[in-house]
Length: 115
Ligand SMILES: [Zn+2]
Image (cartoon, rainbow, N blue to C red):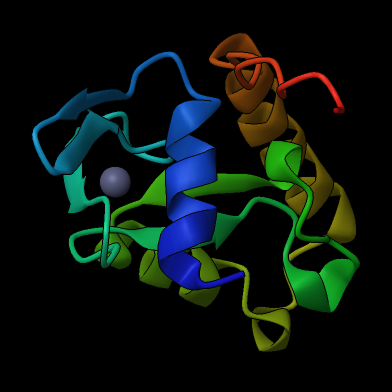
């Protein structure tokens, strides 16, 4: 799956996002600020792994969100393992974002019945 496809699925399952022409428009999961990205290319947003892949997070949709590049970068720097912040702090931060993601969750449209 391409990054643009992951972004599209993250937006599709987030109630703050709506399609406006060729763009998805919604709210960044990290800062809640307005964010828009090109639905075809993904340009304008970055895909966020709420629980970082280096910490065991996966590509499941509940762990993905569309966020600003700067927010993604700040999160990465803030939780850089070399800064020795506690695992408890990281878990609390991830838990808050996962709750926010769950609160904004929108089910995917029903898959067509198998033929
Ligand atoms: Zn943001």
